[in-house]
Amino acid sequence: MSPDLSRATWIKSSHSGNNNGCVEVARLGNQVFVRDSKLGEGSPVLAFTPHEWACFVAGVRDGELQ
View 1 (cartoon, one colour):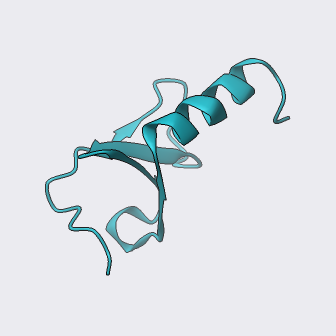
View 2: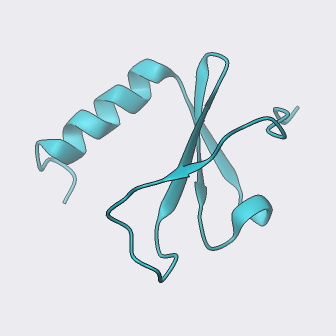
């Protein structure tokens, strides 16, 4: 069953340009959701726990995921 994301507030990084080549992130309940910004509501959505998302962000910041 897919989560109801109709109340999700999607945010995009301030570092993204106008080319829509980035992802959007939304927190809803106890999950973090990620989707492709150029596809918007038609995009497949990935779901993470807050801990998984924090580990991913830390890895990006530390240069582990280049």
